[in-house]
Every structure is written in structure tokens, then in C-alpha cells.
Length: 313
Image (cartoon, rainbow, N blue to C red; front, side):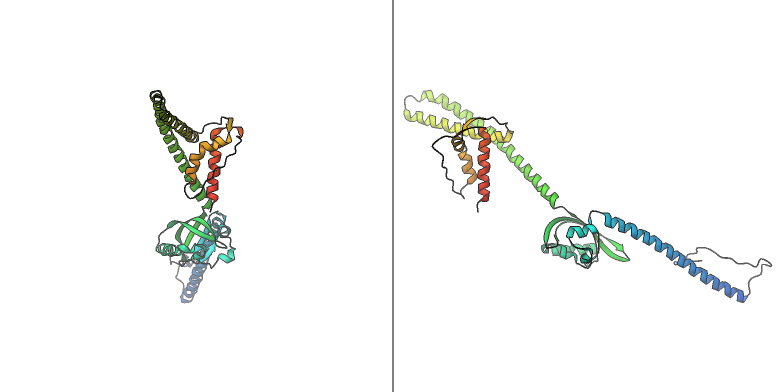
């Protein structure tokens, strides 16, 4: 008995039990027919065995293919979709019947069609790939995707298997993390600059206090000294605000005048507004005093100014 590859599976031997003689021609022809039938039956049995094995493998593959949360697509070398799992139908928002026969390029941003063609060509030559791509759901809704792909034989033909994940949220969180790290770096730099600037101001105020007794009775010189001292004091408040932001100083509520808070922060506000906008300051004659933290009120004013600038056309 031989299989489809003509390998011997077994042997059937018939002898005459009475005299051990060989069979005559008619009996030999009968044995040849028996041998033919046995070989056919053996090959049918073997084919049935392998068919069952293939069916079991197909069922196992189908179970994994349908259960995975990644979007799996099976493509022809030209990009035609021949198979899609439920996760792919959910990701792209198409029904199974709709997806079969679509070209993969209809799910890719038109600006990336050239790159898609190059990838299909390379995969057909046996290369696996991993790319970050911009893909489309039903209605041309864009999302960021991470796509892995490789070739394999499916139902006797060379196919391309792709696994796609929606990484839009992961990408957004990563960009947010980078922005937060950037802000932390800026705050740290601002704290260092404010600290060094505060040391310079201490030298200025100290020099003014030593200079004042030596200016004599000149009212002009006294006014210059007072002006330097006042400017240094205002800059000291400014550096104090920068240090408070950098160090995260706790709230210290005390009676403060709102108009004075605006005046103290005008330098920062004007720097934030820049030259593209016009800033007008209109403060009431009657001072309004509140119980609050001066530094935090300054931060509120800066935040409101920044929001206003961003909202302007």
C-alpha cells in the first residue's frame, strides 16, 4: 500500500496455505486488482486524514483570528482584502461583507498611497514591516495607526497579513507628556534665572542704601536714588513671583488691593501680550481690598491674559 508520494504504507502477502505454490495467472490478475483497490482505499484514507488535520488547523486559526483584539487583514499582493476579523470591522467601521474586496488603499490617507504601494512591493519580495500610518474609518474619519505586516501562505496562495492598532490616544498622551516635560523645564529655568536675578537686585538695593547718605542735599540725586530703589523693589516682586511659580509656594492669604496686584504684574502682562495686541489698563479710583494670596492672584491675571491672547483672531 502506497501513499500519494508513493511511499510504502504497508504490505499485503497472500500464500497458498496447502502447498505453498504461487497463484496462477487468473488468481494473479485478481490479486493485482485487489492491490489496486487497496492502494486506492489507502490513499483515500490518507487524504481524509490530512483533510481532517487541515480542518482542525483552519478552525484553530479561525479562532485566534477572530478572538484577537488587533485588527487583522489578509490581503492579496495587490492590496485587495480577502479576509478580515471582527476587530478590523469594528476599527474601520465597516461590515464584513463590505470589507471583503476593498483595496487597502481605501483605508489609508491619500497622502500616504505612494508609501503604501512601496510597502506592498517590499512585502511581496519577502520583507516584513512596521509603520506608523494615518488611516481612515468609514466617512474618511482619520486616526493614527501602528501597522505590522508579513507574508504567509493562506489556502495555497501567498498573502499579506497585517495587524493594526489604533494609537491615537497613546500618541496624544505622549505629546501631552512631552508638553508637560517642556513646561517643567521652562519653570526650572525660570526659577534659576529668578534666583540669579534676585541676587543681582540685592547688590543694587544694597548699593543704593549705601549711596544715599553720600549724595548730600541734592534733591535731584535723592530722587534718582529713590527711583532706583523703587524699580529694584518692583523687580524684586517680579522675581518673587517667578520663584513662587518654580518652587510651588503654598498659599499665604492676606489683605491685598486688587488694583495694586494689577500694577505689580503689568510688566509680565505686557511681555505676554507683545506687540501684536493693544493693552489698555483701567483701574478704579476706589481701592478694593480682598483676603487672598498676592502671588496666586498674579498667576490668575497672567492666565486670563494668556487665554484672551489665544482667543484673539
